[in-house]
Picture: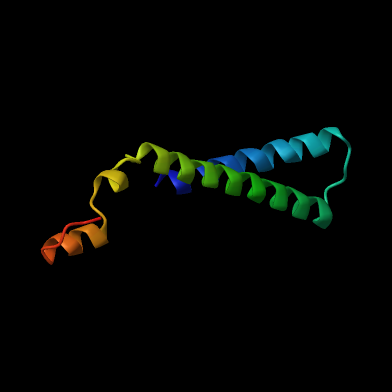
Length: 84
C-alpha cells in the first residue's frame, strides 16, 4: 500500500514544485511545459516507488529464504537420501 501512496504524494509535490520553479524562471505555460512537468514528476514518482519497494524487501526478513530448506533438499529428505 505504501508503494502506491508515497509515489502519488511525490508526484503531486514534484509537479507543484516544478511548476513553481518554471514560473520563477519566466517560462510561459503551454503544452511543452506541461509535458516536461508531467514527465519529470512521473520519473520522480517512479524512482521513489522503486525505492519504497526496495526498502520493503530489505525490511521484510531477508533471512527467511536462507533459513527455509530448499526444494531439492526437502525432496531428497522425503526420498530418504542424504542431501550433499
